[in-house]
Picture 1 (cartoon, rainbow, N blue to C red):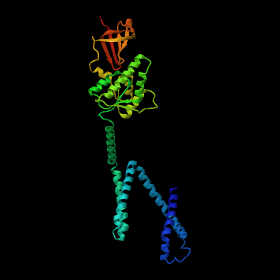
Picture 2 (picture 1 turned 180 degrees about the vertical axis):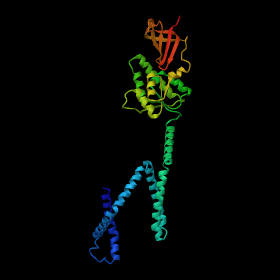
Picture 3 (picture 1 turned 135 degrees about the vertical axis):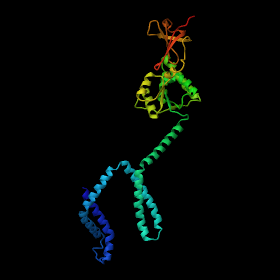
Picture 4 (picture 1 turned 90 degrees about the horizontal axis):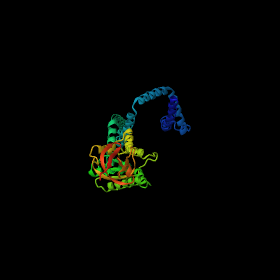
Length: 358
């Protein structure tokens, strides 16, 4: 197949050369008066026929040459070949520009020979430079890309540091506002629209406890927005193919290399499985003083009975469960209790108390 292709190329090349050079040859041989030879189609036919006959003698050599070049090019890495080709193009363009200056020299030999030499020399140098310096060229482009990314991050974030994505539980908890006011959190506090929508559904719930927690979360968000030490960003970015809010948070954090701020034990584990950084408010609370201490009095409303005999259960506004010993008799009443102990784990905080003595 390759041999046939070479023979066809010889045929076409012979026709072109016959059309250009044979009329001049006829003049030198004083054959231009022959009406048959003056026909351009005859010149094309003769030139094609002559080179087609020569192709039977030289086609095998061209096949070997092309096969040799093919073997060499296959062994060359694709990156070297690509950058070498780009360098070759640049070298030929430079040689083409230099040829305009050479044309102004009034020496025919210089005008004809020098451009050819420049094309060969600069084309070869361009290919060599492009293939050998490809790593340095890639580093330049990589550096420019990193600088562009840093500039984009600087433009999008007023404060330094990574983004902190807030989930519903940590907003309702409320302690995030106190932490943000201290200035310990760096970076923007991001609240995705799907988290805000879930918070709104909780605030519109028919359940009184849920409604109170949802409205508390909305108040905490407003407090964060009014705080000048923190920047709150509400983003409309969503993931329609995911239904669960927790998985959407994980997807957002992985996409933007952000940190998830939560006090949800299960979300914490899911983030660990997906190798997403988590800032757990409950873990932070383990490292500082608890909000309540044993012996402190507080007023609560006992709303249901507990798991153990004669226990009652109450809740703070942030959802913290208070187990009241001997509190079953006070279900539905607001009573004063005394804190006996506080249990703080990554899953949350639990307060044990008993009715205060009169």
